[in-house]
Image (tube, rainbow, N blue to C red):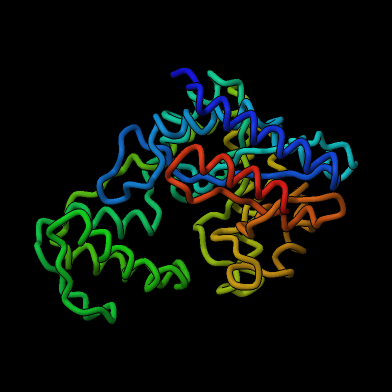
Length: 326
C-alpha cells in the first residue's frame, strides 16, 4: 500500500503543525494507544482497526512524526532532549494480532512500538472482556435473559443488537475484582448456550520472545488486568510485580515500562500506584489520560491519546492538533 496524494498532503500538514508546536512551546511527546489490529473488519465492531486502515494511519504517522521507542522517548523527555515531532506507539493487553498483523506493518515502515502485556492470558488465555464479547458473538440464541446481570431480556439476532448487548454487559463486569469476575463469566457462558470460545486471541510466549528482535519493546500490564483501585495495596503491588517477573522470565531481559489497566487517573489507579511503579523499579508508566507529555511531567503518569476518527485524514489532523494543544 502506497500513500495517496491526499494522505501525503495531510501528513505534510500534520508534520508542520507538530514541528511548529515543538518549536514554539517546547518539545512534547505524543503516545498513541491501540489494542487490536484485525485482519479484516469486524461487523460487530466496525470501527475496530483492521490491517488496511492501520497501515494507512501508520504511513501518515511515519511521514508526520519522529517515531521513537518509548524507553528512549521517556529518557529524552527527562533530559529535555526530545525532537519537536516526538511520538511513540503503544498497544495494550498482548493480543496475538499485535504480533501477526500489526508487527509486519510496523516493520515495513520502520516504526518502533511498545506492547504492554497482561501475563495471565498468554498461551491460550482470554481476557474477561473477550469472554463477554465472544459469548455474545457466538451464541445461537436470538434473545438473552440477562436478569442475573441486572439487565432485561435483550435481542441479539443482528450484529448491531449483539453490540448493544455487549456494551451493556461490559460495565457490569469491568469493576469487579478478578476473583469475582470468573463466576459471572461462567454464568454468562451458560446463558449464551455454552458456545465454543476462541483460545488463540492472545500471544504465545514464543511470540512475546520474538518482539524485541523485531524492534518492539515489551512492557508490563499486570497479571490479571484488574482495576488497581479495586484491590488492596498488597494485591495491586503483586499484580504489577508479577507481570514484570513473568515477562522477564520469558525474555531473559529487564522489563522497564508499565501501563495501568484501563488507565484513567483517579478512577482506575491513583498516586499510590504510580508510587508503586516507581518503587518496583520501572523507568516509566503510562496512563490513558488524553494529552501529551512535556518536560517536567511525571514519568509514571504519562498520557496517551489516539483519535476516535474513522476518517484517516481527520484522524491525522486530530492527532496533530492534540500535539499542538497539549
